[in-house]
Image (cartoon, rainbow, N blue to C red; front, side, top):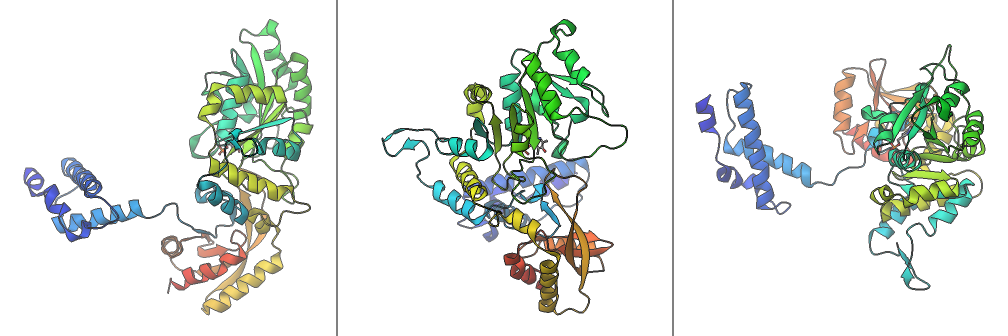
Length: 452
Ligand SMILES: *Cc1c(COP(=O)(O)O)cnc(C)c1O
């Protein structure tokens, strides 16, 4: 083992190889990368998982690959052929062209916090706030960095000095192991669970709200949309309007975490909208900007003016403040929602609205362009995804690209130019067209041609 350590190349020896001479990185950065690679090799030798060491040349080649990966733009554009329209791992909602342009325009010097008419300091929410209030029919709105931040800020500001009560049936875990209740409590507020997993009654909430029956004052109620799962069988949750009456009786605000942030406008009618939650009596609705709203990653808070203001003035709000490019993209997205009629410019709406016939025609054209004999058109089911509409599918059309070694083909497609993320259905690798926009078809064809 000690001889292996002795055989490790010297840092300077690796650094001097031509593979590491590149204007894309400084010598200092290359040196750090070489040192990290050598540290990794030492660990492997120590663990006994390595019985030979690479030459200085081979090590330099490996470090070059790392440096190229570090200095190449990321995240890169990918074609989503999974049939999951809002794919969290693929960046959720694809932005509308107008939103991308607005982001670019705001990226330089912009009038973020200046009132150009008077030349005095303004607010970054000066336009967005009254515009969103009118669009959502909410007395006031505030915007933070993501849905989780909106939930955290609402519970921290409104639950201050006591607890926030939530039904055990709504203790949702969203992606990556994050749980609503834990996020809500991070700001130091106590979360009080009421009811049971399958059933929660009005009297469960009533008990914790009644000062005579509890030692921790409940300052607010939290209602969480069971966004990514469905319960069936012997189940029951109190509905929002009933809960709102109870909350009002005890003077406790009702926070409703909607999650998906639908504004309606042509998307599935049975996913609740922000407007509907407000109409049912939620005092403050929180949701994401990059799910059904189709905007950038953001957290929306809409509702009672005094409550929104308490959130806005809470010191934590400053730490959750969105940047200029986010606000620009959100504004442009909402301007599209504000337009009369359907919302054709939003990519998600276009994907959702595509007819079976349109998808089939595109699939046929794709097969023609590839000219391979084994491609087939397959009827599939697509989903909206993004933690909305669990169990809900819509008809879709896919092209079967490979029947053999589908997982290997899937990997080659992921590493293609451009990368394509498809899926494996019945042991075949397929590209589902509902999550691909028509203008991406040529890029999809060229990536597929690369398979040959
Ligand atoms: C997605 C989701 C969140 C978190 O929103 P992010 O924007 O991902 O932070 C919170 N609550 C519910 C119910 C959700 O579906």
